[in-house]
Length: 419
Image (cartoon, helix red, strand yellow):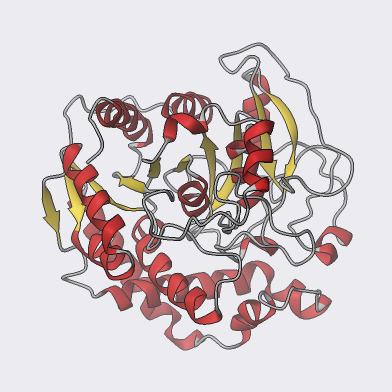
């Protein structure tokens, strides 16, 4: 699988009995585990670290709920990627579509869950690093409301965008993990929200993969998202993308810039140009982009009072391991534009796998071996035998309600024949 970091396995027994008794989980190597150095996917970052003095609070919560930690998983270097490839450790396997990338930067966590090596896993999500690998690996994935889960003991990347998220093979387990990690929601409304399709997101997927876009549109309508919303009518898509990139660049510089300049770390050939952005972005324009972010977040807050947005999670079904530079560049622009909605708004977003989701629940070592044996299978991006994933985006603080809605909608889809 190549999902776990090289070296001795990091295993921690449960700290108590609880609702996650008997379950096993993994942790992305940006999250502290007591007594272990947090490597961040980069050998020079690892060399500069000392063993963590304590578990990150999110890890402690899961151990106290009865789950056992089975290991730390590979991450793209310091979280700066949506692909899932690591120059130093290799690319974790995408178990069901082994010709394709698993998606990053929480690639190892997604791989471990999709292969059945663990029941669930923690990742981090800034610009899509849980959402994208969940879609590519056919998993349920949760990016929570920003700040809902403490970031103590997590390597900072772009802190006002960073979240701790998680993967599971079922909507029920996704919600059970949320019950442990998320704060209580005493003001939860009993009203069912209106479901609105994000018009531009479906159009973007149709531009890339018209067949899959039609299937996703049919599924969205089947769960009740009959009306479409032109979300980018007030502020165009390129403004959302530019705003996200500018805010992220400034925060990466503040979090990691001094260390990078002092250390000159060994980044992989695809990563070095990305981190070079911290010397190139227009610092004088940052206040403008932060002000626009505030405007966009306020717009989303007003829109989502009684509404949940429905859209394709990713602009394409998969990325081949040998995807061209042009293909990757287009993917990044499209994916970050879609992901900017929840990221800039600090909103919760759930990825729902729609193709053969039941098979994910039975994933095991045999299916991994079979997938590896068929690594040259003709499963192309955009074909119906690849993954399909819809996302639900809710208002800030409605994480638990969104998880309940996801379970309801999955049941509805499972009882409806495929179109």
